[in-house]
Image (cartoon, rainbow, N blue to C red; front, side, top):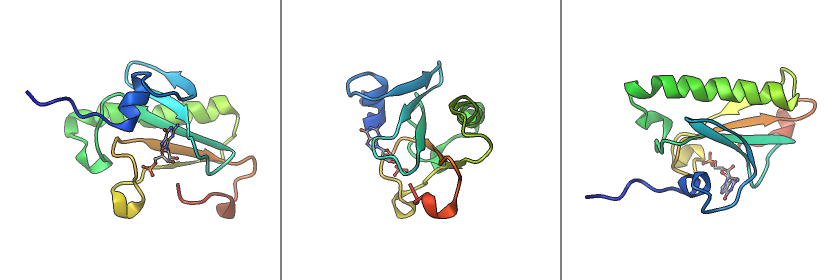
Length: 119
Ligand code: 5GP
């Protein structure tokens, strides 16, 4: 029988590697990015290790919606107001480096295009 798909983020979720946990529920966790590209840079990560957005199944639509809701909730809780960005890099050519779907929540105190490098 094949081993379940393991990723860096699976190891963080399983507490095998350290991370700053900001939020978690039955579907996802939220951690601080280790190399922040903005004053607030959170990663919303599903517990289910979907590799890329394009690999999500129709049966994952509820999960995908939940991840978006959590991103908005984290923005509300972190007090960044209404100036934030949610980014998903899909595939290596788009800058994806960890092949476990995740949403970047990026916000600076005063949101400015030039403040935010592509994550
Ligand atoms: P991607 O490039 O795949 O869209 O985003 C991966 C993100 O994960 C990057 O922003 C990177 O800084 C972050 N990252 C990589 N390794 C770790 C880690 O061990 N801990 C945390 N908290 N973030 C990580």
